[in-house]
Image (cartoon, one colour):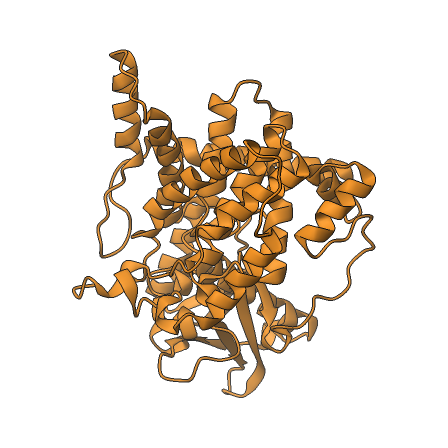
Length: 450
């Protein structure tokens, strides 16, 4: 659920980069990688409409160049893309020189009907004589996950046998009631069935440290974000104002909200700048979980690395339920699936870290998701900046409120998390396409100059 990559978008940047790498893997497996002289890539649906603002073109180039979102250095990524654009060529898989002219080999198809999934890429590889060697379509289904087009909507292949399998919040709660395990303990046991415990612990710590490092970088960065909107970074100014108030011994009642907002804005400004972030569960919503986790670590009495571990494991369970039973893709269900899902995950994680019962955790997640239902994905100018950056700040505040409300009760409530997730899925299906990451409706059309 938590992947380390680069911004600005998990579905439009991380996914296409991984799809490019997957296409290379298929060529390599067929023994045809060295025969390729040219690759043509066509973007459909939401990728075509907002790909230019979401860095999809550079992501495709990086994927074909053999780079991975988890390991590529953001500065080196910029150099690789600039070099390919200047030379009209790139080194396929980092080894095989091919012709690649973005003007003719990277097509944004806004005229064809949207395919099975709104985030679809088609790759065609040809040899020096122009004969087609391979053709494949991949779909970026949200959160950096990619699948072949013919697997969209199909059940995932069976994985290893898990000690505590669940596909609904009801099943998760029943497992906890039967075994006495917390949500975090259930998730950890399932993770350890798939890889060694030490590897799981290492990944949790790396995710936490990457999130905190991203906040720290964003709070001290200055300047203007990339893109035609020329959005000025604000996290640094917020930090300076808060520090000035502290030195003047001024404590406003809403100071805590300002800190949380600053944390979230710092992350999403880093994401918009193409820096390293953690998809949580997406890049566009990457600021919510880190901001609430930082709130826990910096301001909650008794906070510890163990509590942060519980936070992230619990958030993973909620994210998995949202992805399995609805969607975390703005192109599929709008921003309710991104910031709404992140709020739900963060609310559950915070409640767990503060000692909530499993029932209270489920209630916190339900509250967080319920109050994002119907939220559209309408990025101005196709950039993950307005309203995305501020929207993460509000999602983080809502998550803290949701956890607090849930912990004031005993976990009993009328609408279940499962019902809210089903509602989110249906709301997304009913939502007009112009409100789902195409920048054709909502706030995105309020600025004609964009």
